[in-house]
Length: 457
Image (cartoon, rainbow, N blue to C red; front, side, top):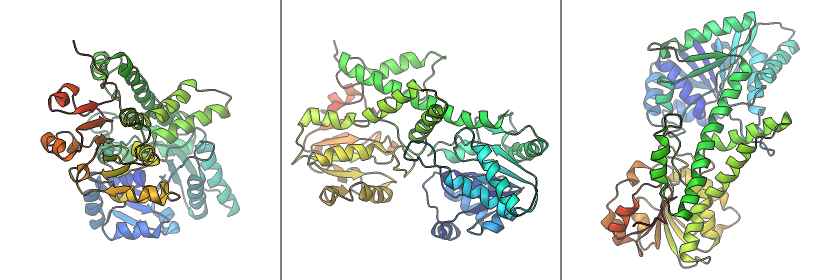
């Protein structure tokens, strides 16, 4: 099948590459010439395990093309995926200007039936706006061409996106109850047939329900995280072990173990903005989502917990203190720094006068870019960040080690060497990678999340 992907960001590039991998002829469009040049030269503008191999293989085979030619992209695909960014607006709502611009371009250049697929995460009702934008451009041309707008939200986890796409746990598709909608449904069935060979994974529904499903899923997961973080903070006060609690409640099949890990807050491009966007949608319909408001507030507080623990241990004035930080990306297996907890922690430490040495296995370049923006008005603070080439290099003469991202490379370090390099053997573990008893036996002062004030009889 001939497919067009509009936007070569995280969702668009993964979608395009994986659809090419199963034999489709995919045209990837982006207005950013620099990004297209990188892709055509064999590079990848994002870090995602396994993606570079798939892109290289299908690009070489001619099944995956990259271009800035809008007219050619519309002419190419019977199915037009809109996979552009939907950044949060000032009021928390999703900014749809890129989505609607893509829709207008389709209307300007289409010459026959098209299926327009909203792949970007968009609020309920966006399909109506996309449909209106396409129709407006057709009317401006004096054309009455058939098309259908479909909602097909993505459920890709950064760090496991290729696996998620190739072996999805569900495929959600919302279609219109019109002749064009039925035609679109048949094309979407054909497109996703290779992903349904073992068993049917597609959930068919109306368009608005499909749009809602994406937000509901992310909001539910964010809620579980914030709930466990709030319990972890209480566990610290009462002397309970949140890890034991996690195992105790996770064994209940009605609850399960997923997304029950306490930590120093969630980040990334999805949960923060999607929770805000869903709250904004609710307000437009005079509905208050009180739970989600609390989820967001808890997460904002949780990103400050590590800094507060450090201050409680060393005092408000951190001048003269040097801190090592392991992990900068918002989660492992990505270089994504959007809404990363590390940014909040570094702001806390630098504001109080500390110096820091940081290391991340993948996100160092992106961190340099993002932190330069974060501290653009505080160049003296930025100068107190040292980017270390290895985890051990970051430890030299540090008063404490702080773990922010749970990279596998941090799970089993040489603890004797860690202790010898630190000025004082103190570890603040924002992801509960280590067992408190083990760390105590190894000679460390250990502060976890919901595990650091344990009383053992």
